[in-house]
Image (cartoon, rainbow, N blue to C red; front, side, top):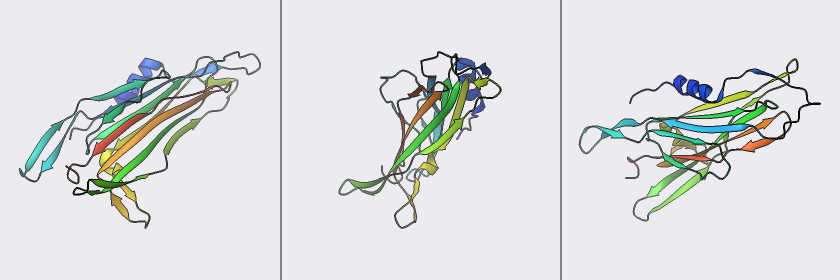
Length: 207
């Protein structure tokens, strides 16, 4: 599988939305009444490979490049298929040139499907607690940051694993990961992104 670097994607977000810089802030005189501008972006492998046991050889499997943006309330929640052995990068950015970014949170929640019964076409599933990345800022010498960036890399192969009720590590055959973001400025206005649902299926367990 071709290995990609996350750095270019971070730089592209920085170029599109700006990099962090100190912003003069006085709560007594600041009249900003709008929430931060936010962007939720997903980028992933466009191709990978798997071992086909029936043909006894490596099969090259191509997927369409994963990349989407979500900024405007009312945008439909997109569902994106990732390769079961690929990686997916999730980036959430917040920008506020009026009253600065006070906090930014990226949340990703997994739902794993397991115990697939091919005869009866049944399965079980479990929803895990969200995994959160968060940055919180303070006023520093009368300035606040105007930008925040959070990133998370999902190794899809590892996303199939979870501990069942008995504490045993179990592997599912399908996983969905719903990622979303929240940002708040120093005047107390916040905004939530819509979610992006990333999913993958282990075809060796469920064809």
